[in-house]
Length: 294
Image 1 (cartoon, one colour):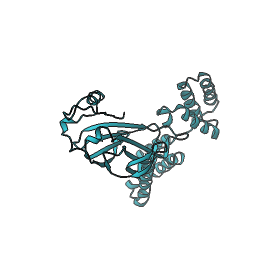
Image 2 (cartoon, helix red, strand yellow):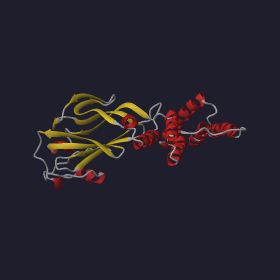
Image 3 (tube, rainbow, N blue to C red):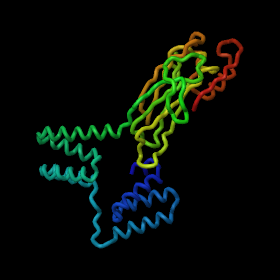
């Protein structure tokens, strides 16, 4: 249901069709497909899915197949009755239906540990850690750069030291196991510690599944002829994915004037930046061409 909950209804329909191809009597897949079709405004196709669902569940002797969650609940009931071996078998059935079901593995591991079967419990806990690692987004590589191919999102020249004559400062990341539909945010901070720019990249949905194996992202600020050229010193960018900070990149810009005092800098605010573009920040009667990313 992940694709459906993420709003990727077309992708969800493809997943349901695969399930139906494997088992045409899989009633829940027909029901889920109907819901997704209605979200896309495909009423006629949804009615066809509804009819297929009704034909299956209304057939004499129909019994809904037990899901992994059903078996886990059965295992809990057996455990409460002191039927520990039967409970373990129920948890094994849950895992058989869904080998990536962390709940089934966790319940089994906890029961094995309670029974003093330490080696088996440790093996089950190790499997849980494997599943968590496989479902967690991680950073394969990252770098600041003075040059990058924006079309392929690849680094050309890595560096953390920039001059006021450099065109751009890039922050680049290569990520593993990236959920489609998620957002990567950059918050760029001046030497005084003020957040002056922010940028984001929306990760598209993959053509199949709900995660990208690997995905490269990048953001940049413009240096030469723009506001950062007037703020030499040590900068940093905080990078977030799904609301969690995953990295801080540190870099420096040199060759310009001494760093401005904090009160002469502007926090990220479109109104402030518009004002700054036409205001003499140094009292020299010059206009600053301020650019920012959104």
